[in-house]
Length: 296
Image 1: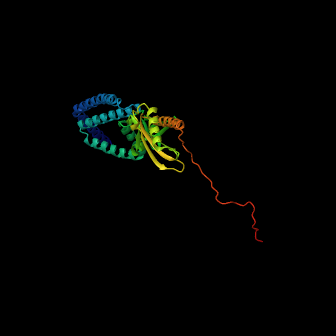
Image 2 (image 1 turned 60 degrees about the vertical axis):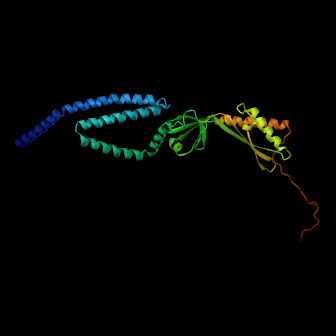
Image 3 (image 1 turned 60 degrees about the horizontal axis):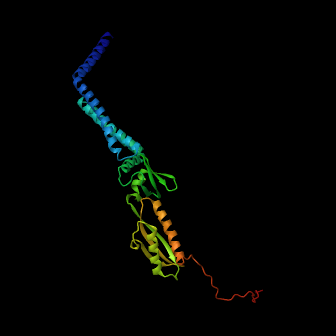
């Protein structure tokens, strides 16, 4: 019994001594690894601040700026950790960490597929010059001003002051109409005049009225006028012109102004804007007295 205890103690002593010798032999590498970690720690902070300062000029969302700076910090620290493990000759440990990170990343990616898709879509949208805060856009059946581009949702403020939160993934996968990318927009409206009207005079009067109503229209040549069809009660025409504006509300205001001015001009010149009329005509005389006796 005493011999077994003695042998166990000797084995333990040899093991501890071997570990101590290995620690002493690797002590210079340990100091180098610690120095590497410290350097990369401060380097990660500097890189995060630098990235934050650079992207804050382009992205106005604090949540996106913070997440990107944190990702930068993690990447720099991970590079420092792998380098320190390499200095300590822990290649197997390094390979194990990489393999575990790959498996964990796969599991997390499958579990949070929808969330991660919206997150990366939000980052992509934040770097797009074609979509910025304050732009008036139309997408996914909604139209309004871009208020926020977060890591999850694309927030649009509609004309009725309601907030619409659209998943970022839907914005990337569907068309987006941006009214703010150009300083001009085309306005078009339809109208009709009576069949008794002088069509050439109607065209001339409409162009002159639109040109006077909008200061940006220099002459009547900039107003498009096209008769379209012989309607059921009127001859219908289409009028189109350009206005200065980058929001849909400007288009609504322009249509409102055009309709008011056209109505005034037509009334002043006795031009009829007919409404649908249905005429009932009875060609046969109906007898009130029925001489035919019902069959018995």
